[in-house]
Length: 278
Image (cartoon, rainbow, N blue to C red; front, side, top):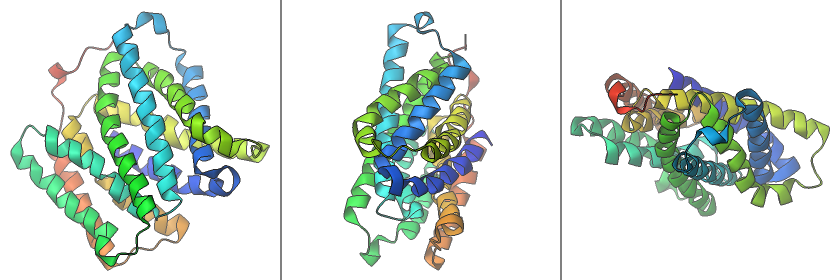
C-alpha cells in the first residue's frame, strides 16, 4: 500500500509538473522541485552527518546523483512524448531489476506480463514516437533501476528520513547544472508557490513512502510493483492532459495491474535481511 500510494502521487506530480514547463523549462522544473523538496526534508529531519560512516554517505551521494539524473531525463522526455508512454519506457528499468534480482524463477511471469503491457501502452509498431524523447526516457529508466537498488540500501543504513534529507539536496545540486540556467530570470512568486506544491507531491511525500516500502519488500517485488506506474500515468494523462489512451493501451493497463498484484502477493522482504535501524 505504501508503494501504490507513492505511485499515484508521483504520477499526479509528474502530470502537474508540465504546467511549469512554459515558465522555467523541464530542467528548471525538476531543479526547483528537488530544491524545495530538499529544503523541506532538511527542515523536518535535520540530519547529523557525523553519526554516519563515510561508506553510508557515499551511498547517499550516489543516490542523490542518480535521483537528479533520473528527474532531469524523465522531464525532458515528458516534454516530447505523452506521460503514459514516457513512464512505460521508463518502467523498463524496474522491470530489469525484477528480472535479474528475483529469487524465485516462477515470479518471472510477472515481469513478462508487465512487459506485454508496456508494449501495448507504448505501441512501438506505429512509428509515431519522438525518438529523442524515447532516448531520454530510456536514460531515465536506467536511473530508475539504480534508484530502486540504492534507495533500499539507503533505507537500511539511515534512520527515519535522514537518507532523503541528504540525498534530495544532492539531487538538487546535480540538477542545477541544467535546471538553474533554464529557470534563471523566470522565477516569479507564483512559480515558487507552484514549485513548493510540486515538491510536496514529488519528491517529499512519495519518496518517503517509497523508502518505507523498500524496507519491507524485495527489490524484485518493488520493481514489479512499479508496473502500475504506466497505468496510473495513463490515467492522469487522460484526466489532466487530455492524453486519452486507445483500446490497446487500455489492455496494456490491465496487464500491468495484474503483474503488480502478482508481485504484491509474493514479494514481502524477509526481516532478517535488513540492517536494524538506529
